[in-house]
Amino acid sequence: MAFTFPFSAIVAQDEMKLALLISAIDQSIGGVLVFGDRGTGKSTTVRALAALLPPMEAVEKCPYGCAPDQPAGLCPSCQHLGEGETPKSHKVPVPVVDMPLGVTEDRVVGALDLERALTQGEKAFEPGLLARAHRGFLYIDEVNLLEDHLVDLLLDVAASGENVVEREGLSVRHPAKFVLIGSGNPEEGELRPQLLDRFGLSVEISTPEDLKTRVEVVRRRDEFEKDPEAFIARWQEHDVALRDKILAGRDLLPDVVVPDAALERAAQLCLSLGTDGLRGELTLIRAARALAAFDGDREVSDEHLKRVAPPALRHRLRRNPLDDAGSNVRVGRAIEELFGA
Image (cartoon, rainbow, N blue to C red; front, top):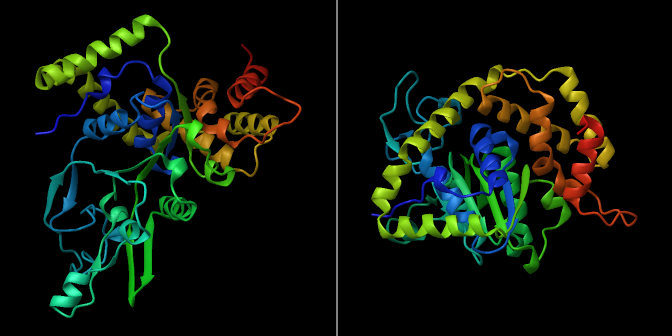
């Protein structure tokens, strides 16, 4: 049996953990891009969050894991259900699907089921990785090395929540709603600016430089590997409390109010930073609303905007030849000028 490192036991990397948590509350934020050194817990944190979430209800024998209480979004396999008929369902873990480098487009979007075509003469669709990731997480390590056309395809599907396949005589449309998580090492190449902008949040993590943090990371990982069951049991109470907070945040989210003052602050911040388009404001507001719900607040405040502004905006800045400061410094400076110390 494979064990997953507890989310609550992950040391430091607070910005990455917060970005993933609020993305789990509001999927419309647009996913998370994590850039940082190897061995800093990127994939561990993603898998820990998925394990933290409670199992989800899914239609039995459905290859897409459709939600039985959302008939409007059912896949072709479930659309045969009669009106008013309640499908049989069962609980399944929240999926975390890894997309390896070198994967083909057919493997990602799905293709003709050759085995059934050859043995039974049937033209059937074989679902791909996007189908498996529905209602969960699609994780791409080294996303900056992935072929551009695949990244474009993934971002389009993540934005629309639907995968459309028109090939080999097939015409298939199925739901594909997932949180897209990309990670990479900036030393191995950068993402194109137009692709950077399509990710909702961007976080930068680094190897801890203080002795106390490094020792604690090694200690916890060593304890987990020696006796994973005992280690998970020790952190179970913390994970359960965090799970309850996520579920409460999801319930509260529709009732969180975004006052005009918060909208104006978000627009002023994006204007001062010179972000292109309005995606920056939209993401900033969605992330602030999700954070407010996570904190149990019914109204978005300046504090919520200040906390989510760096991951929501740092990757949307144009390069300024007259300003050598990095994106983190520029966002921090703009926050200080607008909100004060």
